[in-house]
Image (cartoon, rainbow, N blue to C red; front, side, top):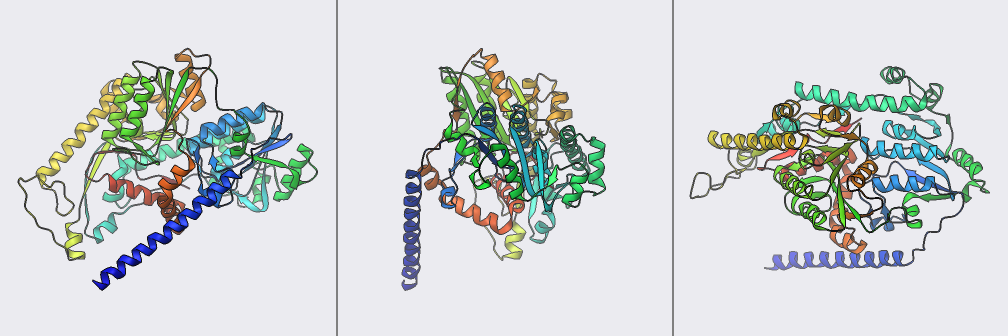
Length: 585
């Protein structure tokens, strides 16, 4: 009993200390918010965009940024960044844009939308200067749209071509005596490969190579057009590893010069006419959003925009997931809202639960009977992400969007050997019938149970095919021939009939307004914005845990860890999901 009270009071003390810390954090953040001054835009302002900051699809508040000294604490979403740059292009108080290109935290399609917006900003007569100490390839892709692109004299430009990497766990599972009982439909459905193979299968190599070449080809064309270099020349520079220093990059025409950051800012100062580089009026896009009303729209009619980002899960899901029930209700609300004349759904998801995807597909089918439903694909809209969208009136994608992956799978691990031989743990029990506790990770599936699982997977795959065939007005045999779990770029998907047009959110909204015959409209967003207190109290422990793990293992391995977690959550259920998250180098 003494030992019990010892642990009880230790836990109680820890809870008390945590509560006190959380209370003072809330007081600190509330005080910081209260002391915030309204942002006033001044003449000769220069917008500032750091490509190393990850952009979510939807603008979200981050109260933790206040604790790190960042102001303001909201980070504009992808579409908002595009609209803010468009607004600033016509704002006489804004002289130009300073692009920090030392890193890049965004996917290929997001980069394409931002790059296009930067190019249009420049075409409006504003200067755009990009700078990085060491510029990675994806940052170079975006920064190449700038009027001037500079690099640190002792830094460099990464230009080696693209590579793709998968992580395989089969040997580890074998050593642990864990049998991943796998069921899948589609010879290209490689989501289960990390558990059943030690290296990529030939079909997966074929699709991955073609995907990579498609994305790389678009990158070469885009950069070559701006830098006035042939794509064959750019490819040869990478293949021959000729770009090893900043000096190499400048001589070969990839950079406009080598500069220290103070030299770059001096050039900006000369353009703005400020007294010194310390007087340059840099304004982040988040602050610019506070200073202007660029995104409110006009009119009484509405277009409802639904941002679907993250893994697709059953139920409500959390803030980083697409909860099937929650998002089905968003679509239903938009359908029943008399002021909403059209619906635009922005999808950035590699998929997840097949059942949740089916339910959202059904809600879109009901909605499009009453009003236009347009879908815009972001970096990834594949497997379950494509499933939910395939019936929309029109689908937009970027050339380098990753899409397709029409296929499904299920995994039921048999951990009997692990528990018994590795841990010395055994299980026993009673049941009313042979399938009463099926599936169970503590014993292997019988041959008949395996047959049932495979039949279930095949049935859901056929349903998936029929949904695509109906939505895209294609024979089911044609869908099967381009399905089989195969992933495609947006450009390939357009040729195959899986999407309708190339374009981003702006194009999707324009199409929705045209179909709904709207001259002006306001935008209603789902998920609805929640205030900073709800976000802080609801996500404190998750944020702390996530940041701690990410700092320990790094960003790339943290993505692998998240994918592992998401697959664990889907054990025993049929999943329409992309392969393990692709890590590009």
